[in-house]
Length: 70
Image (cartoon, rainbow, N blue to C red; front, top):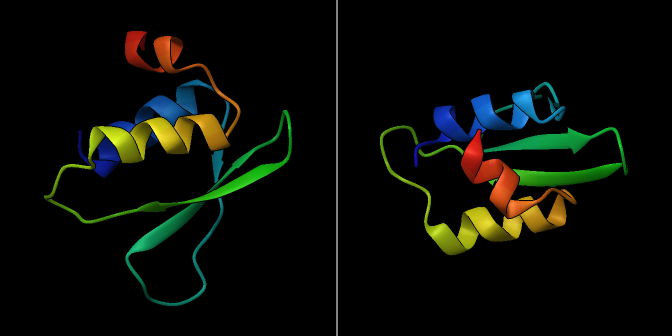
């Protein structure tokens, strides 16, 4: 799954992207429900690995099954 697909799903689940202040290949996401902030790699055309995705979802305090359904 590419970064854009992940970003779309996270928006639908209520998370917000924190604006970038500089360069780099990671973007920070914020879950307002629990205050969690997690960096997510934005590698453009490359897919994020399933283990990386699961860890991101867990750190944001979201449900993996719900993430897959969206």
